[in-house]
Length: 287
Image (cartoon, rainbow, N blue to C red; front, side, top):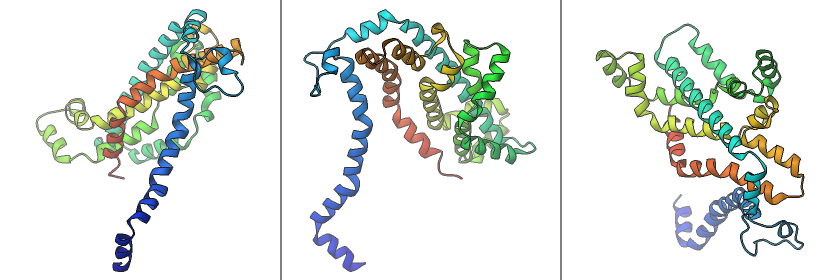
């Protein structure tokens, strides 16, 4: 150990090179891989059609061209698409977070038969791909007559095993003395949840909310299957409508539409990402 420490102290340049190759370089490469497509999308959205198809490749436009965004708004009911996504995301994410909080609270603070079995079912649900239940869900929603409705888009995805699991792990870390004190003061389950547990667990709840919002906003497969009328399409599905209308002849318009879909949730995610880190850390101390 002494020899290893002495060799490290006598070779600081080697340590710096090792740190660069094993730490910073992989991080930089990962960031480039994730950011490059987004940058290319934004750059292409302000290019004219000849600039996009120029050979050799023209990386930057001669001057930003906003006609692609204007064409998206003029040719398609983008306001309706945006409203549909906002409604589906707000209602779906809100109900998911509430259900996750209630379920996690019951699994930790309420005694009832087969509680461990319920938690095992939730763990199993985490491992089941959502594509497995597409056909049964479609059959049920079609029988109920909920095609091309908000109910048809929102209801099948209201269960959130991830949120329930994460909040349960967080609730397990709470000091029982606080809960016992609230009980002695006459607080029932409802007051204990909203006056005591929710404020303490705010970072984890915010994490579940943000992840759920991003997931709901970007959901593509289920709205594509259950909706076939343009006035009920969400933004991700609307991109398919735009691609079918324009084909590959107008990539500038498609990139502009994609940017208008991605940027709102990307901005929210970037501004609030510290809550995700804090929430995941807060809820990861107890198994």
